[in-house]
Amino acid sequence: MPRARDLGIEIGRLEPGAKNAITDVEGVRVGHTTLIEGDDVRTGVTVVLPPNDCLFAGCHRINGNGELTGLEWIRDSGSLTSAIGLTNTHSVGVVRDALIAEAPPGEDTWSLPVVGETWDGWLNDINGFHVGAAHVREALAAAAGGAVGEGAVGGGTGMICHGFKGGIGTSSRAVGERVVGALVQANHGARRRLRVNGAAIGERIDEEHLPLPWQNEGAGSIIVLLATNAPLLPGQCEQLARRAAFGIARTGGLGEHSSGDFALCFATGNRGLGSAEPEIPLRMLNEAHLDALYEAVVDAVEESILNAMLAAETMTGRDGHTAYALPHDLLLEALRRG
Image: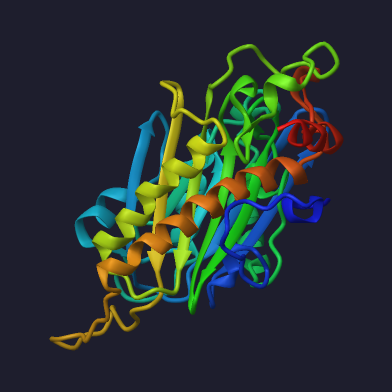
């Protein structure tokens, strides 16, 4: 399926990285397990693997009606020490447990995995608990750099975004030698508020011809994962995570009461943080250079959300419910109208 730039849609002024994905940050890998079975199983698991077992990180809660486990330790320590999993709301526990089980063996192995969720219960039999440990292992085994699957894949399989089929999306931006990559699990927003490059898209698509999946618009959530090779300290990672909210807002997201919206940023520019040495030399990006990274975050998040919708195809799931894909032709026509 074409991505935004394949359709001639360019978000912002900064250029993307070579793959226009979170994997443009060297060492970051992404894997999916997609579960589509029968009439009512539409779910899965996505894993994002950082390139090291201890990296500086920061997080931000936009609206808290959701879950991203492990955030208290990230806030307290400023570090990320695990893989990151994404799945449906009622499978957080099994994904968390499986990530612990797959951690490198050692005496008194300790782990607080980071697992995020969004609710796929309109298309998926969410209380059937179809995600198991084996699916997490499959996603871990499939994790790789390079191009990232988007749309109705992995944890994004049953998700809906701005009244259209949603799911996983990714993008990146280059700022000189610095790269910022984003990956979203997009399951949020209302169709009437959808904007692309500032153009009112959702309100121009006739509901009679493309029905809304359900009338409770704005219900749902979004998880934003950010990676950068910049040498950031934890507070700076948190500052980048906060800017994810602007990318969500530019597409029309509000962080509604019933939405769980979280952002997590990790930085690979400092390594060896798990060393037993009494002192560890660190690097820090001059604060005066953070604005360019903020811009990169906002653009990459906006494009990731759009890519999630563009890659997703119309899906019918539980009880015959259907979520319709964002029509590319109607999108382009709405953009031409400005």
